Amino acid sequence: MGGAAVVVSVVVGYTSAKLLTWDPPSRSALLVLFLLVGMAGVGFLDDFIKVRKQRSLGLRSKAKLVGQTVVSLTFGFLALRPVLRDGAAAAVSHRLSFVRDLGPVLPWVVVMALIWFMVSGTSNATNLIDGLDGLLTGSAVMVFAAYTIIGIWQNQHLCGSASEANGLCYQVASPLDLATIAAALTGACFGFLWWNASPAKIIMGDTGSLALGAAMAGLALLTRTELLLIVLGGLYVAVTGSVMLQVSWFKLTRRTTGVGKRIFRMTPLHHHFELLGWEQVTVVIRFWIIAGVCVAAALGIFYGDWVGSLG
Image 1 (cartoon, rainbow, N blue to C red):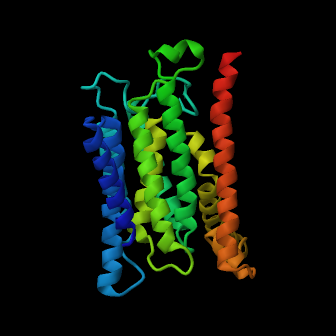
Image 2 (cartoon, one colour; image 1 turned 90 degrees about the horizontal axis):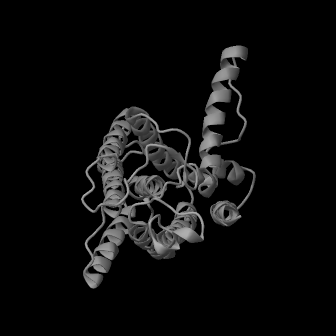
């Protein structure tokens, strides 16, 4: 349940920023906060059941999926509403995006399915990687720091602004406010890491891991960088992929040979390296390095696309 501290810190930090500047909160920022708090609520129920019943199993997988679905689809409905009181661009695009919109306009149902897949998938991915002290927290710092940079850059090059003629412009609603949320998440994770580093004195729990993943998905959707999140969160993709490969290969070999076989000694992937003899701290630091490389690559792609538009 320690992740509740991160969630509260982000809400308090963002609220304080709005009170200090007397700027009203933007729709985009409130949508990210809704995802953060909503998914934290699902995780809190899971953690509470574990503590209350003194068992490792909290919410059953179906119940957790229902909670994730309710939060993600509610977010999607609010984000796709045509009413825009602030006159800004639509919060979430009806087109798929990498660093900007591409491809045809997608039907509303398809976009809702994409939102559900991204929010549920990313929150599950961060939940899977939260198995070693500081691993999720440290990697999340890098991802949210990247979204802080992306939001600030998009704000400087908004479509319709004076800088539009200088190159590629971005049709994003309230990117500076999204950068503020991302900065609050970065700071909250940094502070939490002080106590979460090995040996951890406080752990994320599902309250924090599900919330952070949902916030990443929300930032990706609202900054219109859905596909870029695959690169930014490359570490999470690899860890989740290891679980999917392990389960699929085990079922396939058991069906064909009668004996289930494994690709890895244990999944998620970080536990495989522990069983190979790596110290926990070594696994965490090396996975942080991989996360940093992924973030650097994603920012390079983002900036490279803008530079390429100048030619």
